Length: 456
Image 1 (cartoon, rainbow, N blue to C red):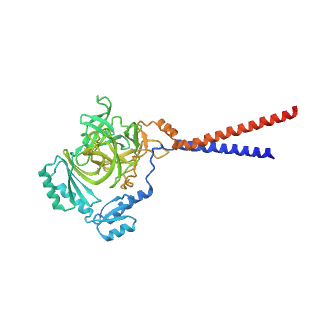
Image 2: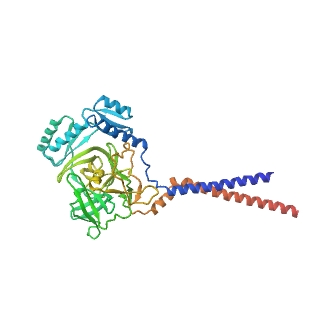
Image 3: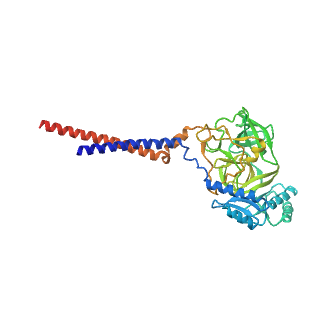
């Protein structure tokens, strides 16, 4: 009876060890097959719903009863409204209303009046939805006389136009994530795009006029392509057609430094308060938030409207570089003031407008499980890609060169991915060896007892 119990226990132990081996192997396989640990999870559905709710309410109520929407610090949508009935409707929809004095129509009328005034280089204005104001800024190059004249114009519009002086100068920025050079200067490759037949670089329009030749080296030996279409001033975007018509491997990745990049999955418009990231060859990867929309900047070279205003820092050498969040393309670095030591203001050309006007699409990462790269994004959606302030990340990480071996090694070496599976495998192997040793030892002792009794 005792021998039967021992055999039963040994069999149960062996079965448990084999089951552990199978389970651990499955866990390791799943971890290796999954995305790298640096891959961020998609934004929560509830947050995306909040963004859609806010923008949808503003659109339904109209520009005479609302004055913009944004995502609050708690992740709930906030809609600026001009009357109590609109506030009640916003509240019933699950959003938070903020009663304000001036509608979107009034805010845009104010910016139109400012645009009609004599142009003053070094000035900029944007819509501040949270404070229900139009903020006018003047840099250090604006004279006291010009500032006084513009202040009179603002005073004639209303008290909701706020005047601010800022340090530094509003200038266009050159360079960016991946540097490209021409006789027009040094600029940045922003995002790769396609018209379905040829591939292009989408970059800042102030980088160079039509026909500019671009190279990857200072000697002018490695030709990248030629500027095919430029929009500047007015907008700030241009297309550089690749010399061989093909963006090549890794076209869906934007560089962020140290040989790493972020996979781009689509394009969208940002919302106020959204956390965003910018990559540039001078200052590297920087982050901040969207502080205003529909900004107008009077650069020395001309006026650009419809820009995104942020508190992300940038320096000369960062222009044309990509702005993104959660792997979604949002903007192209246009210009600004300040630096990454003292901080400053940076403006971005919205990607969606550039894609529509140039009739091209982003080259994006293929859906999970599909072939990598080469997939063109659909037409840009009007739905913002924002999530709650502070909750965003740049997006899924990837090597700039498109090499997958290092990703596989990093996943294997990351104990958070394969550690539990490897522990189960190791424990199961120990259990198998132990059961085999115990059985061998028991058989040896039984053999000794048998022959001892025979010889005795």
